[in-house]
View (cartoon, rainbow, N blue to C red):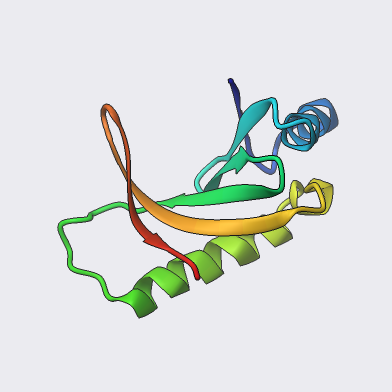
Length: 106
């Protein structure tokens, strides 16, 4: 699966490509510094990568991380281009060989 990294300085063409990848479930979009968007047939999984996982966190802290990331996504230039699908939010820790899910919104 293709991965496309974008930010608010992305060209209109890159933003359109990101929207197309998500709509067709043909690629992953990384909104630089905010969230990784993994398209699924009926939803988009929005993974917030957590730094400093050695620090113990409670469920409320994970919720705040997700709320802040959701607001940032909505306010970004990508926000209005998001496909009309349910967004499922998770918090992950990324290790060199992959990600480990730490928390999932219910």
